[in-house]
Image (cartoon, rainbow, N blue to C red):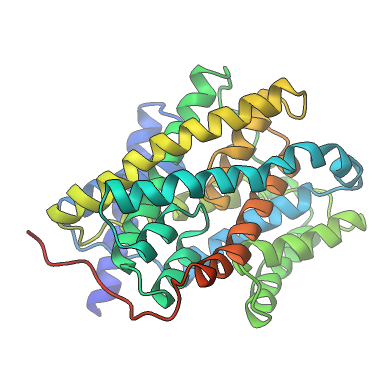
Length: 354
């Protein structure tokens, strides 16, 4: 058996063990946190873990279908009511940039391209790609954004339980056995077809957005009336957890001291900014506390979708805000970087371990 398959099999087995431990201890979100912390711990100990590549990407399509199935005519009628809180998203991004870039450049000592793309609250893959084109330290960017997602995915459920009194026990979907077979087949087609067509046309976040668009069309036309089955949502959590954990494979002590610590400190800054914006939006009556909190938590879109589902939040409301944030960052970050003279440099890597 090729080495890469052995490493992936070991990663899958370790993640399953993590699920079993979290389940046995009745800890929250065992299918997300179990694999995430098991793989994270093993990665930091030097275990030769290996991500699951296309399987992990395919798992994210399930969340795209879940979001699309939640877009109903009733949600469309609510869009004008979301405009007030959505208007705060660009102001939120601007505040993050004004605080985050100086933090990474002046305080942490990163070069300007790395500081800029480390501060932007976009998707990990997108920010690393743009940063590479601008000559940023791609390894540092990967670790900083992975740490941002890891810490936020860890903290947000704790906040939901202790601050918002949400048990995170809302039904995530009906069992597959209770859903019509033809509807399950349509979901599978929407997931794979939307993903591949999205990639073909260059759609950002194609693995989630493509299936979301196709499923939303089916939902609005009344063809699909259910979310993906519970088993599929749990599988998506499992593979997302693995993806976060294996992001730390090969991390050195130097990178832990510099990149990971910087990412953790930056989450504190983001948490303060998110709290301020959430408070304003809730006080103005533009969102309920849970929806406002989840809408402005600067985590990954897939992770926030999972948490919105288990918290029983208005999935359409939360996803619209994250889509606007990601769209503005992905479209605006390269333009702003070019205006600041951060494009066209040669990409660099982290310095050797000290």
